[in-house]
Length: 98
Length: 399
Image 1 (tube, rainbow over the protein chains, first blue to last red):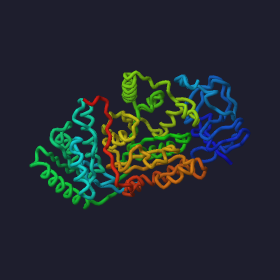
Image 2: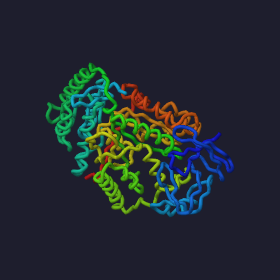
Image 3: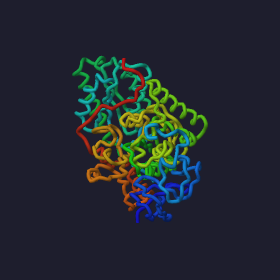
Image 4: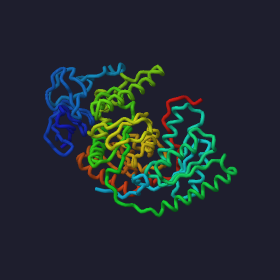
């Protein structure tokens, strides 16, 4: 089974350790070993993130046990998480990629 | 746990036993290299620092050159110069002498010409190597060890593979009483508050914020503002969503311990634990700054892709003087990259492959650090025959 890594127990996102297809169920691993499973709602490329819980608009998105940004859209469990639904809590994204 | 090191007169322990032949100014590079190349066990420290620089850069050059001579991996040092350099050969020698190790200063101006200087330099270096070669390694606790760290060529998995593993290893060394230094001020701009939170007290947090502001001020003075340029288009394609995420991935290599202090470039830490050194993200400058601050081993983390392919992962071709470097690779995605596995000490791609956990890789990585500290040669150290001058961080103009 493919894997996604939850880096810190507090995280509400996991990072894909290979390209995950929409609808695919993958093993969820921590730094020490497997901690569960998660089904991706959309395709998630290697190194990209998927949501482990539902995250309300404006709520904190967590990776490394820290806030990496705020949800700009409601996010469902298993959703692909990236610039389309998360914004920096510090800085707007670079103009060229807006 | 212990490692086998060389006892130094100042109470420190070295993991290597070099005799450094240090050129005090670029005009003496050929002299230093010729002497070192003629004596097995001697290492030349050559560089491009000219005498036409401002006070601040000259002071930094003094700290770098004397810091390398004082590094515990150096058993003894010969400083060679013309006699008119800035920083002066004698000042470099005086600073190295504070570490109580043997040091000799030789200049053309204080000799009967060039050949006399060469003869004295060769005799001195041979004598020092002869003395150093009789030293035996003995056990030291891990609290004597200091690591320098840098990541580069980051990929989508750097933050979870190589950097996470390095963070675990740093945490473990610091728990054992050891020290680690990281740098790259530009790397933390935009997420500096995340690191400031880890400062041991408000004074350290303030010094850290000042270092970041100063770097940003220098950049802004050129008319550029780098806030708002991160993450880059390439980072976003690799899965990094925000500046916070990028910086946290980079900071993962620093582990989770408190930030004990903020150092100027090439400044020695006064205590143990985790330290931040102000400086650029240029690998060669950074390694030398950490070496001058007294680290024993450098850890270089490569994300993967093309940066793992050109066989000079530290952004520095050829031999790195004084320090063994342990190189780590996170991801070798292409066949072109896979042939490079042989050139890394730690292969962390097993996290992505699924055959090892972060903790398992951290275990063998920690064992490797102790082995290298006890004398095991790294892949990087085994490459010899090509050398570049060391590069120092400067902020002023060349006059």
